[in-house]
Amino acid sequence: MSDDVPLGFLFSLLIVLLFLSAFFSSTETALMRINRYRLRHRAKSGLRSARLTESLLQHPDRLIGLILLGNNASNLAAAALVTVISIRIGGEAAIFAGMLILTFVVLIFAEVAPKTVAARNPSKLALPAALIYYPLMKLAYPLVWLINLLANGLLRLFGITADRDSGHALSTAELRTVVAEASALIPARHQRMLLNILDLEEVTVDDVMVSRQEIVGIDLDEVWEENLALIQDSHFSRLPVYGDDIDEIVGIVRVRDLHGELAQGTLTKSVLMAKVREPYFVPEGTSLNKQLANFQRLKHRVALVVDEYGDVQGLITTEDIVREIVGEFSADPGSDEPEILRESDGSFVVDASSNIRQLNRLMNWNLPTDGPKTLNGLIVEQLETIPESGAGLTVARYPIEILDTTEHAIKKVRVSMPENNREPQ
Image (cartoon, rainbow, N blue to C red; front, side, top):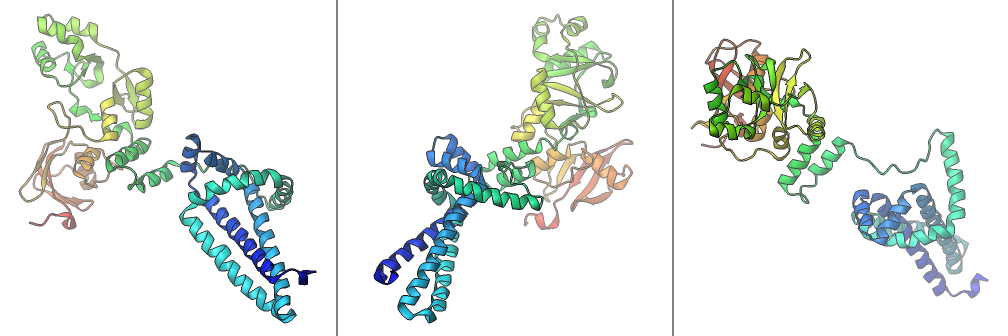
């Protein structure tokens, strides 16, 4: 009966089957390679093809079963058709040659080339294909269900369960990589901010707090006139109030609450104490992510960081956390930026009490931040002693010279750039 069918029709049918095979191969690759997050965005925007694609990908085992069913049916039908054509042209001796040619054609034109194109432009093929696969899935569902039942049963014998797709959730580290590699789509400043937000979980209040030695506050044991001058000249919105020592903290006062009495000359210690608010304490090691949430929940702006013994180690504000996200604000008289002086030889004179993370952010340095929080602490840890003026060392390839010290701490240092980072003279 096949002898009555013109060869031209058989070749046309073969081309159609090869086209179907290429369609199934390319769309399989496109659907598996499509960006799920971009797809979800398009689906939420109301694009019908994106919604259908997302629906199909929620059950990848069914989708793959449908595609493989169509692909194998096309390839098997093409093989049978080539056998008929080969016999018509050259007899049984031509069957092997026909199969060899078909294998080459399928490999190149129905597998490698279509899949390569699909891998480079998955969304251009996946979304239109979903409009075909969705109704096709409805029609062929009983057969696909049976195939998946047998396949999943076989997988369970090997301890593999075909669970519903989890949505390709990313870990924080993976999301950081995605943001870092999206430089062509995200402005550099926004990219840094997003990365800083992701880092909030790893950075603790210890890393960004004002150390207890640097805390500016109202000492009730000081001469009252000095406290009045401190309040008058303060560039901070809130000041801690304490006894002789910061560990004897009484509370926090808003400077603007004192402006009226200060202007009238009626601000006394008793008036001050009436406006003091209860202090808010947080333990060392609290992540900035958690602390920012606590600030929002408790409606606080300032917190005192305490160690396991309850001793105050520093002070942190919401501005410190915001600065960690957006970077340094422009310098102003109330800025707590470290004092950094550039020398003519390209080195920098730095206050040793400066926070290392802040220095790295301001100067684009790479000093280690996994240990001490201040430059003074980092140097003392390296030398295991408080050095004398004139001593030198190298930390993370940065030559550091000690300029000024006291019995208890290092005051000033000179930091030079690594050799390969120095600017040409």
